[in-house]
Every structure is written in C-alpha cells, then in structure tokens.
Length: 371
Image (cartoon, rainbow, N blue to C red; front, side, top):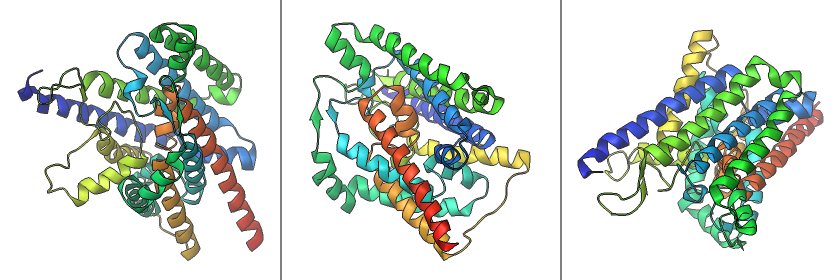
C-alpha cells in the first residue's frame, strides 16, 4: 500500500459503511426492529416476535463473523470486545443503566436515529443528551468516576475473552476451527428457537433479523478486511482505517454519537475526521427517512408534556453513561459484540435486558400510580 492510495481506500471504507448504515436504517424502520420494543412486547403482551427478530440477527452475525475467523479474514482479538481484561462490573452496571435508560428514552441509540429519520424530534433531544453524556464518560467527569470505580474491577484472563479463544486454549485446538464449530453450534440453537414458532417465520421477522445480522457481518468485513493494513505506510504498523478505536469495528452507536457531536463541533480542526462510527450515525436516519417518506409514515412529533421531556432527558443520560461504561449498546454489544462470542458482550446483553425489564416495570408503576 502506497501513501498516495490511502485517501481513496479510506473513502471506499467510509462510503461502504455509510451505505450499509442507510440500509440498516431502512430495514429497522420497515420491520420495527427495536430491542426496547421487544422487551416491552414480552412484558406487556407476551409477544416474542421482535425478540425472535433480535435473536435471529445475533445468529446471523455469529455465523458470519466466526466464518470469517475460520477463513483467516478477521480475528476477535482485533476488536474492543475480546481483550484479556474482563470488565465484568462495568458491563453489568453500564448495561443495566443503558437498558433502564432506553425505556425512559423511548428506544436505544439505533431506534432513536431511526425515529429521528421518521420525524420524531424527541429523538433529536435524546441523541444530543446521550452524545454529551457519552463523551463525558469517555473523557470527562464521569470518565474519571468510571475508571476509579467499576473499571477497576477486572478479571485478567489467560487469553482473549471470546469463547473460541478460551475453548481453544483449554483444549489445545486451533482458534479458527474452534470459532467455526462453536459459532455454527450456538447460532444453530438460536435459529432453531427463532424458527420453531410461526412468529419467527414471518416475513417481517425474517427481513429484520437476516438483514440486520448480514449488515453487522458486512461492516466487520469492511473494517477488518477492506480497511485493514498489515503495515501502514506512515507508521509501518498494523492499522484499521477510519475507526475511532483504531481497532476493527462494526456497528455501534453509544460512543459514535459522542464522536459525531465532537466532529460537528470541532469540524475546523483537521484532526477531527470522519470514521465508520460517525458515518453510521449519519446513515441510519437517512435510511429511515427514505422508508418513512416512501410509505407515508413520516410525521413530526414532539414532547407531550414536561414529564415526558424529563423522562427522556434522564433516559438519554443513562444511555450515554451506561453505553460507554458497558462498551456498547443494544447494537454495539447486542449485535457486534455478541457476534465475537465475547464473555463481556454476553454479560452486557443480559444486563441490558434486565435493566429494560426494570424500566418497563417502572413505567407501568408510574402509570398505575397516576391512575
């Protein structure tokens, strides 16, 4: 790779990520893909359709990612999800905060971007507050609190925390083959659960789950394969182009919302450049808006009252702090992280679901008390 070729390759990576995020926004709008909605459907109505959609997306992402590991295209260790340090307290506390917050905020980061594209101005407020609090948890006041408290509780593992690496080390198997076998086995069990019910075989669930899962895999390929340099011409070191973490990335929306605000606010600073995360944040509402306009569902929407505003402000703050603390959101940990079969991602997803259930119960209690 010559230095003169870097701008063109970087642009290809960014445009590819933007196109995939537009597609994600379109599919999420069309299928009502939403983790918070999935949990609320179960608690209120016993309807598991949207949860099956989420699990289907996970299964597709797991098969795709671990298939690429088996082919030698990517490694879980190249992502932020599979390091040797298991921040179990951070993932549990941050995940629970995020789960509770997304209920108060009427949806996670991805859902807020999709709703914004459909004309929901409440989501704009949520995203701004979420971005500010996420940035504070990356580099500000709450970052100091995070590092001194939950991040200090660490389990040091002998290898990466992804299950294939742990199992391969224990059984003395090669990691690529272990990833393929384990990925297919776990994904097959998930697929069997999704498809055993008629709701899991509906067109909406299949489109949402297969589409979202495939986009996660495609973004892993864009970042980990297309944008990978074994030797950067400037640093002579391994590099992944256009990522905030300087590691391989797929779709995530907690920290990227913060980085998007940072890019917008300091645009004249030459060091602030577009990344996969930023263009993904910009792409989701575009895809949603296209579908909303095409289906006649676009409409402006604002806050109903002061209490509604207050709930969304608190929820957005919890999502910003919790999303960064847990190293991801329902998409970052719940789709991208899970695809690597990371222990931290499994803990984060469990905590997000528990937090969301608590949030739904709290909202129900609020309504009953007012009645």
